[in-house]
Length: 197
Length: 264
Image (cartoon, rainbow over all chains, first blue to last red):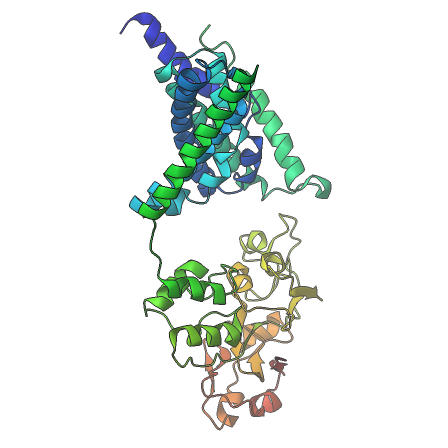
C-alpha cells in the first residue's frame, strides 16, 4: 500500500466523520437527525441502519452510474435512477433480513424504510459521482458518511436526554431548543476543519 | 433525438422492471409465514403498545396469546371488547375482566417543612430529603402523573391528582411515574379505597398530616368479610374479598376510607 492510498483512507474515514460531517457540516439528513434523536437507543438503531444502507446503496449506485448511465450518456437521470435503485435495494435487503436475521430486523426494521428515500443517502450517492471516487473509495466514503450521521445523532441524543431535565422557557421547549443545540453542535464541529492540513 | 429519448426510457424502465421482478420473486421466496391468528388477534387489540398486559407491546402480546402462553383478557385499554373478539378468533370462552380504576392513595393535609425551588417534577423533589411535605408518603403535587398520562385523564386539584375514570384506560403509566407509588388499582365497579399510604406510626402520621390513616384497626374489627387489614401502619383492602358494604368507611375515625365509583 503506498502513502497516497493510506492518506486517502484516513481522509475518507476520519475526515468525513469529523471535518465533513454529513449532518453538521453538509446539512444532509436533518429530518432523521431531529426525529430519532429523542432517545439514545433509537439514535443508535437509526445510526447503524444508516451506515448499513449508505454502504450498500453507494456500491449499487456506483455500478449503476458507471455501467448504465455513463455509457448511454444519461448522467442527467442520476437523481431519479439513484432513487429507484436505492429504494428497490433497501426493500430487497429488508426482506432478506426479515427472513434470515429476525433479531436484526426487530432492531433495525422500523428504521430501514425511513431511510430509503432520505436525502443523506441520495446525497452520498451523488457526491460519490461528483468527487469521481472509484468503487472502494465510494463504499468507504459512504460508510464513513453513515458513521458521521451516527456520531452526530448519538451526541445529539445524549444532549437532548439531558435537556429534558432543564428548566427551559416555555416558548423554547421541544424543537426550538433542539434546533439551537444542533446549531451549537454544528459550530463546535467546525473546529475540526483543517485537521489534516 | 428519438434515440436519446428511447435509451433513457429503456434504461430507466429496465432498472425499474429489474427491481420489480426481483422484489416480486423475493416476496414469494423470502416470505415470512406468520400465524394468521396472530395477525387477527393483533387487529383486535387497540395497538396502543402501552405494556399494561405485561408484554413488550401489542405484537408481543398477540403472539403470546396465539401460542397459548397468555390469557386473552389481559389487555386493559381494549377492555372486554378486545377480549371477546380474541375469544371468537381462538374459539374459546374468555373470562370477563373485572372493572378496574386508578386511584391516588393520598388525601394529604400537610405542611411544608422547607421551600423547594429545584426542578418542578415530583421525581426531582422526592430526591431532595424525600420531598418538602411533612409526611414522607404524601403526594408532592408536581404532576409527574399528569405528564405521564397519554390520555390527559389526570387533573391536579388542590395539589392532588384527580383521575377521570371515563377517560382513563388503566394503562398504569401514572403509577410508574409516581415516585411515592401512591397511584394504585382499585377493583370492582364501585367500592372503597384507603386514601393514605403513610407507613409512619399513628402518632407520627397524626402529627404530619390531618387526614392520614393512623392504623387504629377499627376497620379491621368491623369488617365482616376479613377484607381489610392494617399492614405497616396503613389499612389496605383485599378486593378479592371486599363486598363494598361500606362498614369500614362508616367507622373510620379519620374518614380516610373513601368511596369510588366507576361508570361503565
